[in-house]
View 1: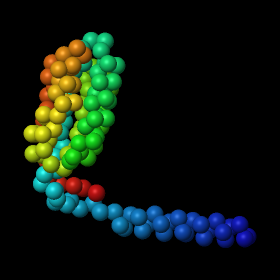
View 2 (view 1 turned 90 degrees about the vertical axis):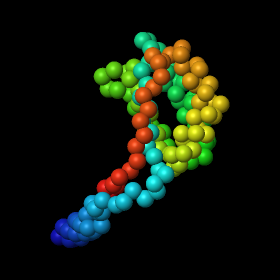
View 3 (view 1 turned 120 degrees about the vertical axis):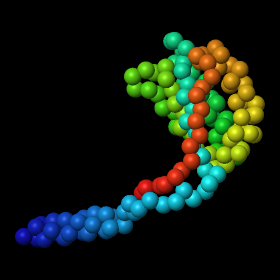
View 4 (view 1 turned 135 degrees about the horizontal axis):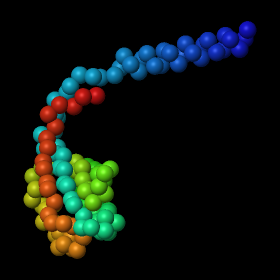
Length: 135
């Protein structure tokens, strides 16, 4: 009997926590906030049989980029059906910095020069701003 009581109390507590978490969930859209915040999608195509070198060179580049001002994050994605297609999902808190100073950094310029050895040409780059944030 005591075990049933303890189990009942635990279930009630767990149910209460789940209910409270659901009540606090914010599903309403919010405004974009920082207008300078920007997402950059950079799509690369690796040369045949150079995928590993491409991943390695991009990883080295990102390690340097992470130290730049206005950097938020970078995620490296690989196409599930074609590992030669690589996407960087970058977040920056200053669009102007990205499009000017970042593009002129020594490490990025060196990567661009070296990339002729493992990429099939320049990447496709697109810029995105947050319109609504759903939480």
